[in-house]
Length: 239
Image (cartoon, rainbow, N blue to C red; front, side, top):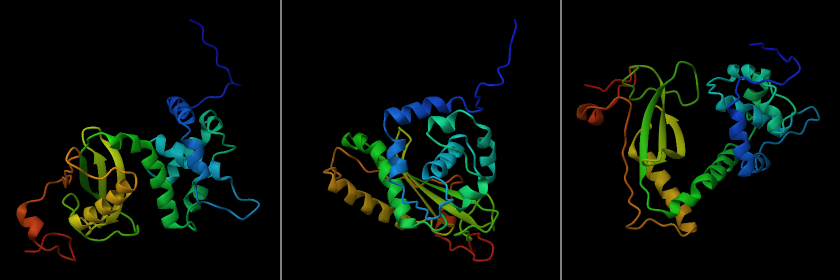
């Protein structure tokens, strides 16, 4: 067997992403997502909106969990071109991209395009499940407060409220709340807002659409822990 290396050919460490990008183009999802983004720059030296969103998009699809990991995408010579990008942004540029953006406008933008993906499925009978997960934090992130945290007692945390369609594992929405906001009132507010959105499209709850809520955590609480108040110093159930 004779192997020759073509030094001129474009290569990528994320070859599987090309197929997903083709799906996005066929479904016309990426172009509309970029076009509706409320991100705007006034400087002549500002990056293109497509480059900023494309960099974050490729980093997430590559499984990165930190901004510093974006540097690994900068060596990709294939996928950025498939998305119509002119360059990959640096980690510092991507980190600062949304600092001055309107939070509510960005949330509405993402929610609009997320709902566009699953709205056709809501015309069939389905069940809504709610999953509550505790995410321990080791920095000084916004909302990092003491709450119920069985894995790392005394460690600040976030609570992830995930709403998804049962059995399909299709995520409808995720809310990130401070560590002590893990109660059912969070679910109630989301369900009310979601029900209004359904009603506006003629998809109100009825007998053929059962609504089931299950609050689950990574470490199941005991009955005493559920009812006991949380100590403000250590984050453990008070005795």
